[in-house]
Length: 590
Image (tube, rainbow, N blue to C red; front, side, top):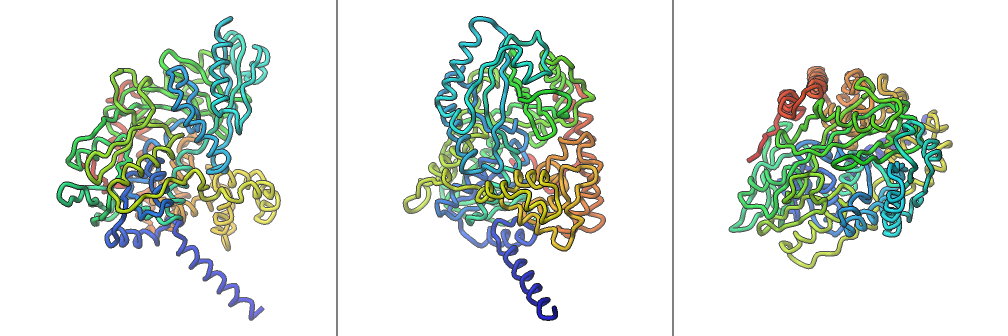
């Protein structure tokens, strides 16, 4: 025994060293190193924006062998990329708009996610399309779905299945009998958007990208007539530094125009923000074996299965107010309830709502006044020598957008650029995932967990589950559920701060976990426990822990109040008055 202790100690030291040198570990120790590298090194590309397109662009560039830095003013996926419908879908309704290329492209991307790139994070999900018109609607819809399946929709998920009214009601007993005359079931795919985006960013770091959040671009560097880098501020402590680069790619979504103004040049396209609101209700409020897609007068409404919940949405309205914190109004919520209740036998009420979230789609501004009709296709432009902007598109096609952005920036880089290979690059956690699913019972027994819990962890972390569980070594209490959010373990909170780049309580409650939308208390009841765990990793003082809790509670309070307001202006005034977790953010930057 005396000889065994040093060996164990040496092994622990080796594991700790390996963790510290792991480039995909976005922990507190790495922040100082990345700050030094940003100021000292010269990069081929600087990517601005930590949403899915920015993270995807960093991954694309890094896997082509380019030196790349990714900077994000707030948190990974803190904007649109954590507030989507959480679907990887081909865009069935775009067939009606005759956007066949967009549908084909999206279906190919969905296939890649399900089979190669992120099988641990992206899962098939079924939808019922209720039929309401006799004679013409079934053949019309079937023809569209047949095209959908033929374009690639039925490669890794089942094809369409036709149902009588009785069959559809057996599948979705929650529907009114009068709400349909039959139905067609088809499949799409879904993912936790914030977790997927964060994993894309960590994968980019794994391949050499320097990834840093809470790092805001406050200016552009120029050499003669070309952009040669950016000036950034660490919004946590106010330090500034300059990053030199061959080219800069603006992947800031709804902030595209603002960054364009900051660069001093004119953009080649305008981006229009469209607000989409979703509500989250408990699974038992809608008795169904399948999600649903319902037609509305303007667009479609999804009822999407989400763990123990349903996500119902979305709206599609212009938004011209605070880009960082779009607010849902009572009108938005009433719109969703009215449309979903038109088909439900037992209507939903405001009391059934556990969570609400609002996001902004960055649409390319077009001639039409209807945002739901604006193109979801993306545009890339070299707006100045050394500066590329990309906007539009859909979450599903982020990888294609990223490849196009790097191709456009390659003009400003010396030498021949390698082609994109991200269609062959699995995200962290994908390799070995399927084998671990088969070994879930064994893994559960090894750690004293229920197999259901291990499967849940595998669908969040994939083969990184070993790294997550290792964070509980010597601390078995971390393998217990969070007291007021039992879907999550304490070790997940610790891992979010030590490996996943979370710097604030809000990062953990709203994005690394989805506690802020999955529980009626919206994270308030577990804020103290979670803040304490995060504080242990990040070295917070008791005063900082207290401040983080107060800021988070104020944010929830402001959101709750805004959701009872009749107008965007009234809701925005309440929401924007809440304190910002990253107090050093400058907005707008131009």
